[in-house]
Image (cartoon, rainbow, N blue to C red):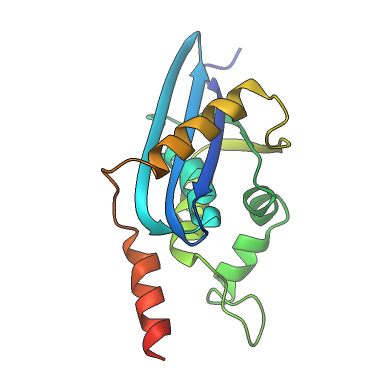
Length: 165
């Protein structure tokens, strides 16, 4: 019998206005225990928060684990399960010859976090009554609406550079 822990992880992200204030929520359940994570950012996107929810869930694990990570983000699931993120990384974060991949900073973190564990990603339909996904949605939306919002430095720096042309 393996001593490897199985962790059920759930994550969600939110952005009000997209881009706009955003937040993520994550929930870990293992061995009869639960732990929640959430944080809000003053200006970000929904996809960045979806990624960050999954990242925080995985990065919070103290030892290699078997993880079943459920999210309502097809962007996150497909980026990993279909190998898109690894392909983008191997191409210098390019989707193709003309387009740069979005969110390379977070995809890099997610790929690194996934490599430390045995992760299976599961897509769940959002707002369909899935209890843990609904809990993460509440965490993400509450965090997005809080006054104590963090700075998504990479996003704001790229937005500023794009505005300057």
